[in-house]
Image (cartoon, rainbow, N blue to C red; front, side, top):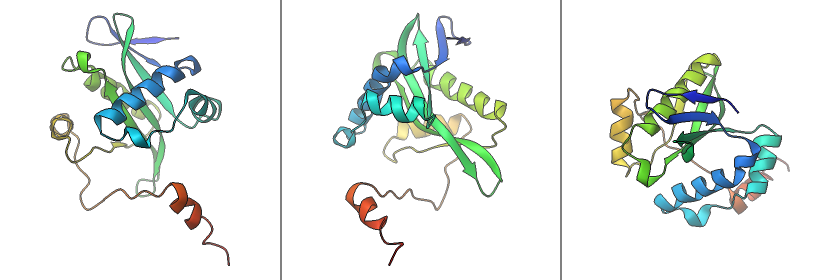
Length: 169
């Protein structure tokens, strides 16, 4: 398991492996709790192992400080029809509260941008709650811009199931 050295002493980044499924679920749950959405989390380590690792549906980076995991970045491939090229969609970026303020999240996002360029992607995008002004300010300071006039719509559960049957007579 290769670790990527960063500009911060003792902070390294590595790609997640199947054995990290429990840790990734913990981080997903911690982030959902912070966002007051824990009641929506149904993921389990088994689900991640199957869809993320066995089927290659997503990837994650694990940030480690002094050899201990302190956060993750969860992402998957995307594609821009406007650019005609692939991109990367960051789903979750989470740093343990006791490790925040050290630039670890910025380094992980910077490394994800490096991965995007390495993979010939022309876009890295992510979503952020409009109430999370601290994160929004950081993203703008790092050079990100908000996509105007677009809202994310989501369909899941029974509504997804019901709608999936509407294509046929």
